[in-house]
Image 1: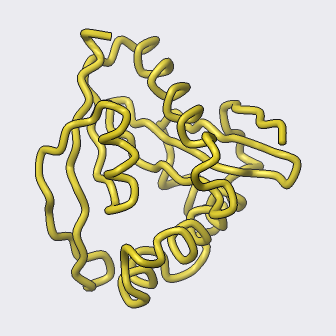
Image 2 (image 1 turned 90 degrees about the horizontal axis):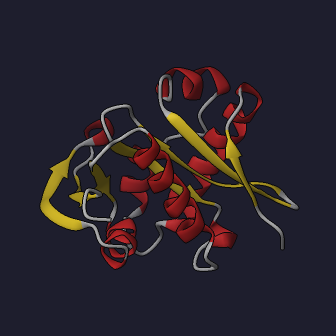
Image 3 (image 1 turned 45 degrees about the vertical axis):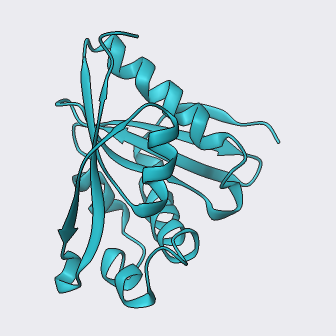
Length: 158
């Protein structure tokens, strides 16, 4: 399978909303219960919602023969805001390639410290790639309690 990583365009937004929803509801099974996954993503997000939600961010998307396969986003302040891959692409190296590419983008923008609020599953990935746990925190999306993990990555020594 050949992947292509590129910057997102407006035509990607509805697909990113569906991919986010699918990744939460299929990819996070076992780490979060059904009520938590439904609170995290009650329904696929519309193109308009995603356009507003990701406004001003660097949005990298990966495509394969089936379409959108994953995406990572980075705010101007250095927060890795979203990091999702399609459930059938988990563990095949796509997230590693998206991560490396978003780090290159951060360096091009002279960012030296990145932060992320990682899910239980993403925490393992980020720790493997040099991120440090700052704090496990309780969040309440749509009023449902769940945990995520604030993490940091210092790029200055790379």
